[in-house]
Image (tube, rainbow, N blue to C red):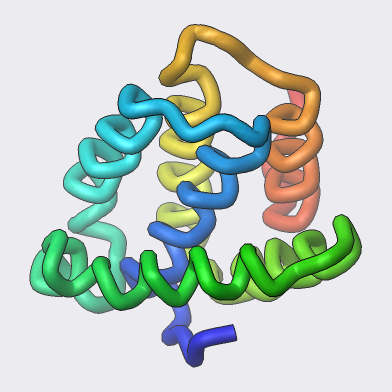
Length: 131
C-alpha cells in the first residue's frame, strides 16, 4: 500500500473509493458523492484542502486502481481495508467519515449487502455504535 499519513485526505479518499467499489459497479453519482464528501471533510483532515484537489488525488486514484487490479482474493481486499481503517485515528474524523461513507454507499439509490458489510467492519473497528 502507498505510504499514508494518519488522518490524511488520501486515506479518507481511499476508504470512500472502497465503499464506492464494494458493490462491483462504479456509477457517476457515487464519484460525485466522493468529491462532495471530501469537501465536507476538509476541516478534519490532517493535510487540508490542497491534498483534496483533483490534481493531488489523481496519482492516488491511479495507485488505488493498480492495487485493486492486482488483488486476487477477498482476503487481500479485507487486509487493504483494515490498513486504511487503521490510518484514521481522530474520533471526529472517524464519525464524520463514516457518515460520508454511508452517503457514498447510497448515492446510487441502492444499499447492497457488501456495502453494509464494509460499513459494519469500519464501524466496529472504530468503536462506533451499531444502532
